[in-house]
Length: 373
Image 1: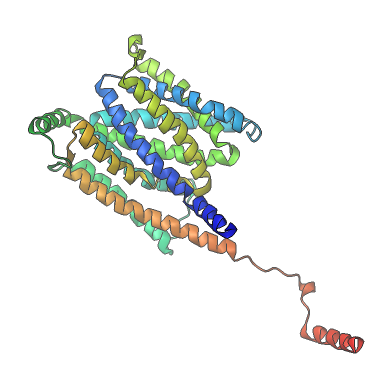
Image 2 (image 1 turned 45 degrees about the vertical axis):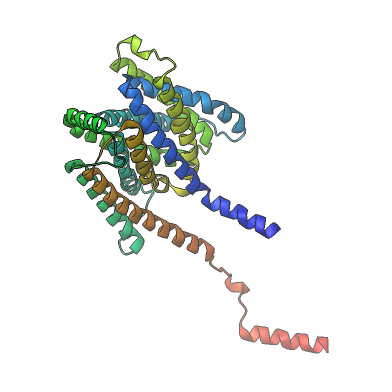
């Protein structure tokens, strides 16, 4: 019974990172839908970013204060500057550019474009020497080829729109309304795509800097709380510059409050902590490897709730991106397997003085035999 419990505990420990990242994708899919509804009600994305991180800070700070009071490292200027950079890369650059891209395109297109995240993260990880490339190894070739395929899929999504594909059939009136809305917003697709690319670069940079910061500040809850603080401060400064009308900051008990609360607790507070834990053990490339699931969930929810039509170009490009993505993930998993194998094959080191010649061993045995007789 003890062996069975031990095996089950070991199994849970192995699948925990996978379950954590899969669960986050469901949370992100819900955020895409909730924020899209909120934007249609007229809420400013600059203000949403501030409220989102204020809610996240209220949710996660008590746990950070209580649970990590004994293990929290001392704050230094070097660590603080990295936290400031994290607050700028994720809350300010990533989220604001993502929201602009979301409003300019569709929830399905934006979530599909996020599939570029693992490839861009891999490129940045190589640049900052968090990933190693050896083109003589199959695993490294798989990561490089997968990255190229992923970028090709993104180009297909950007340059080819194609006919509309109805995932879930809608009444004629609602379909016509969706087509008209898509035609009206067509001129913003290029700008939306550029903003989504900027979002992906900022998000990838966040994971790379987060991985470096965790080496010096290994307190995941506290780091998540600090990022939320920087999100409120830096995002608030940007929002005050971009939104001069103070009445736009007023929200009631409606979709705008729901968007701030949901995205704050799930997609900032919980997500920052979970990503920190997994990033610390598996690295930034693993953290970003589960985004295709979010795209599938978002496409289904958007078709049901928002009556969005999916274009063939988005589906083809997303399929190509997924193929490239899992080539990168396969290469990454092979690297981890090889590293574990090297760790298990410990070298045997002996001093020259401790190594006895056969003649010495034979003489000792001869001396020992008469004594025993």
